[in-house]
Image 1 (cartoon, rainbow, N blue to C red):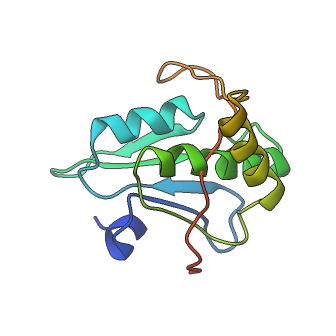
Image 2 (cartoon, rainbow, N blue to C red):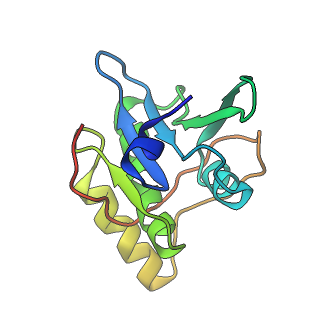
Length: 136
């Protein structure tokens, strides 16, 4: 089962499906556990669909957050992922420039607002580096 990260050759794809309010975070098929765990720690909720090998895994921004906070969480995760060496794309309708700039400021000043949590724990706010400019 392919996904956007497989299709575009990125490590992380952040987007909202057409006519859907959920923000999805996809990684390539067979993504390393380290990347999946980092997405968990950044506040995304992991989901998986049991297919014949490999298992299809994706993350979503927690549904209990309001729309603006969902966008901020997704955007703030970008700098962290880029600094970890991952290739990230975020579609323009999800990207929040102010949240991105704040995340960069927090990283540079060492005052990150990020709170990590163990997989399956409560969601946390997150931060991330700039996305690539591709749109769907």
